[in-house]
Length: 67
Image 1 (cartoon, rainbow, N blue to C red):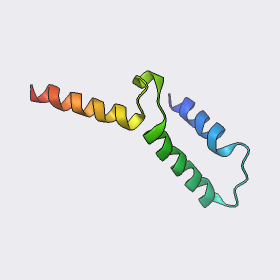
Image 2: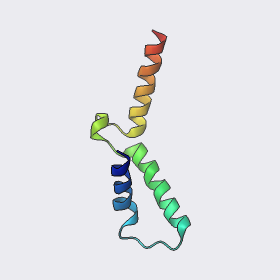
Image 3: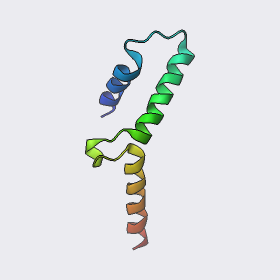
Image 4: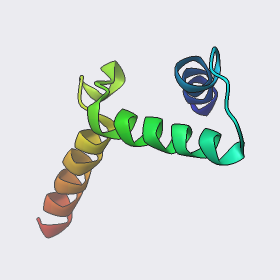
């Protein structure tokens, strides 16, 4: 799974762009990761964003512990 995510970063952020320095690369990757976590709907998560899937999991886990 991590390999696929790194491939996606390369395809969406790195390839085809010219960066002036390492700071620009870091900023572009941070922006992509934030956007990915908030907005990308992932099929294996039931078409929820990673943040939505995590929130749902945390809610279900907390209700299961309370029971």
